[in-house]
Length: 170
Picture 1 (cartoon, helix red, strand yellow):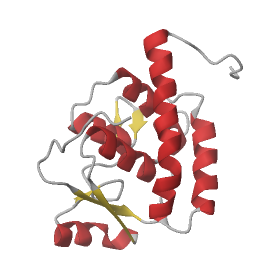
Picture 2: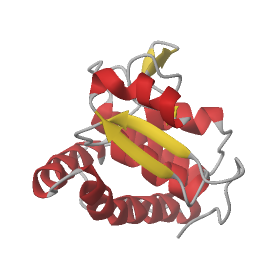
Picture 3: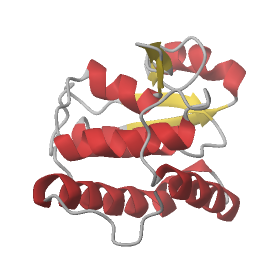
């Protein structure tokens, strides 16, 4: 399912974020492993340690206060870290951009100020369930990555074939 087979950044990269990942902090590692560096390593640490660990480990911080790759507002709309990574690395895959709407809607906190997709509410619910099932953040990644694989395939189906859900709530 991966779209990259070698790192676009050279040797494998290291990334760090806050522990107790739910939506954006699981979606971002999925994005990184599938579109930027298939061998990327992820560290989950207490929120107040993210920037210090990033410096010490030569890791890229994300979805944490003070990190370049975090939530931002543009044109009055809130975007999440998933969007920040897509923007920084110039990713243009149309299905990925559709997936970003789902992630954004499940993670953005400025109510009503995003172009989220209706599937977002299901992603947020599933993410909470996975977080509560998983023993730690690494197990959470392992459990949730197939969900993102499936959502990406769904977005490809919508974008490439023009399909819509049969039973969606409007």
